[in-house]
Image 1 (cartoon, rainbow, N blue to C red):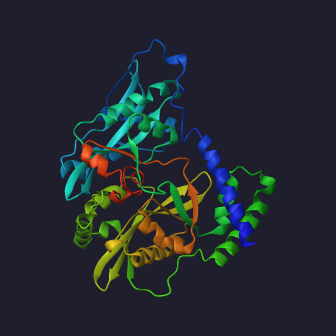
Image 2: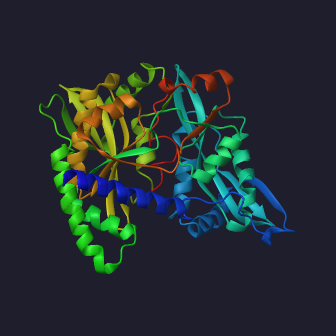
Image 3: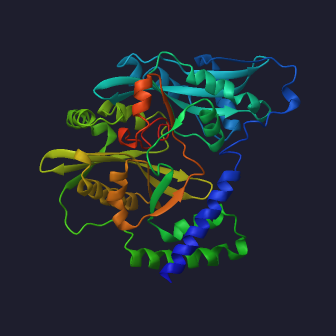
Length: 410
């Protein structure tokens, strides 16, 4: 029966992925422009704050979810990378057809540490183009990649079609193995099975019995294969903190980790975490799980809650994780704490995406389920050719959903 449960789960996940690849909200054909735009003047210019109403309406048309002028203030005026790192306060670019906004690509300023240097980065966000003008999508991405006043250009949430544009414009896929593979643990088999049944569109007549059978199989299979994160011995004490409680202790830990390694890492600090995970009108609350050896902070994980309202699936995501010297024991302590915290918060699934292989390997002892994106969503290009060459090595990266805009939106 456990083997049957595993096969059934994989079959269901495969069907979900197939449906997602076909979903117009997730990807589009970059050459799908129609003849509607013939005779219209199409141009690209830098976005201004006054473009917010038009860009917001564009995003809603493409199912991107709500935004606010307060969030724009946060991203492009209260951004630590701008006032601490002198990054350009550039919102992004709009695509216009005869003066009407028909496309947008944002660029979020960020700071990175690499080889004891500070790099100014820009990460794409909110890429959307109306169907009739998608043949001109590359104009937005070209404008993004032509920025001369940043050191590193990132797209961490690329759809398959956007990824093709990035590749055509000589951006490179992140070399971190299995980045596109999401590891996850089912916390509530019943609710997870119901969400899956709804996602794949099972008829109402069979949805309830199929969900019930799937839930039973998942529970049995999870027990037999030991999928629940647990420790035989607690080596580290873990505590839950609100993001607002992080302070100088957290700053000292992050600073020590940034300069102990030769990997490219997004700048982390208490201020950056609050800016990243506490946006205005936040619908995805986050918390910090801190690991201690005695009274010394040796690692942390940021867990962020989210709800897929279409299928009523509650998810907890390990949005950031950093431990002293990549020690597997600390990683496992934090994942056990994250699992417990997610259950207590009523989540149905706990997910982890990205991170170097040493971090992922530490949790494989619990046999997590996995699902794959249609293609890797993370692309980069460095201005300096020497840095670009070094970043072609997997060992130069510590990439996760903390990078770019993957967990930045309210």
